[in-house]
Length: 319
Ligand code: NAP
Image (cartoon, rainbow, N blue to C red; front, side):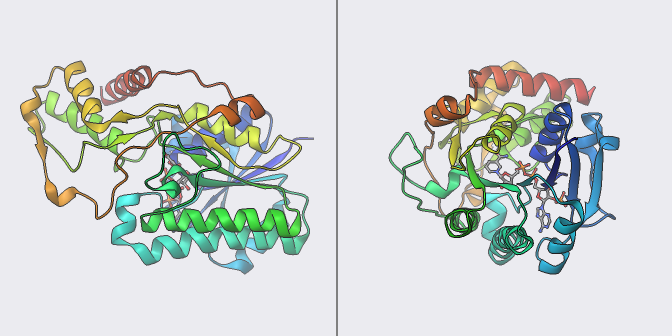
């Protein structure tokens, strides 16, 4: 009999790639959306799997709805990917970000506990929770969040750990570093840069306006990162893992690569101080040894190979 996976945040980048992976492994997929009316499933359509996912409406901030949904579908695995996921937006919407990102996790874990369900739980945590730390980040690095988003993800992680330790629930946090794909939302850095650069190339725009680009981040390839989520729930013992590429790259060098690839002069680049964030992590990269050794997660992509894939896929779809 097929296993049942319930994925929250099915309309996001990771939701689509994870559903694709699990469908190939013969899972039945229940994808939660906040509302049928704006249930944006273009990611599932892009991957050709929209008819293979059962879309269900559920407000994750309403415990009674979450209990009813978990009770009805009795998932073997829950992947909690739904979140207000933008650091920048979290400074503008701190209350909404913290309320949703924390209460949703609590409601899911509380439902699993109350229903006494034998169900494994994955929480989408983030490298952002470590703030300005000694590099490389490891699983033992102290959590020190410096944005409303990372505060919400830190709290969600502690809830996940607490339900594991207090109630024996198989719950894990994956601390994922930035990961990209064609399905990334338009408001995230690399996608935004590529889209605007293509507009400049096509003479639909003349400049690219950015904030602080002298920071460095650890970027990876989303379809490979969702494999790690799946692997975490296939272990005998629940634990938390960093999922990252082991190297960081400056945002400035990403822009330079994209501009050179598309033959755009650097004079089109405009730095806007108004776009700087109130607090910023200058550099961050992680150590993925534990994920590779314990989960058998194999990741060997170089960042610029990923960037080239992203530009080429965007160009193909723009045509
Ligand atoms: P994404 O593309 O931004 O998708 C976020 C998902 O959460 C969407 O399905 C969205 O639904 C849902 N969501 C947001 N606010 C909601 C709300 N108030 N009520 C119900 N649903 C809501 O994110 P992603 O890149 O797939 O990332 C998946 C998870 O990993 C997120 O939790 C993110 O914080 C975390 N993460 C991502 C990265 C990364 O680099 N991608 C790195 C670290 C951690 P709608 O379509 O209805 O808006």
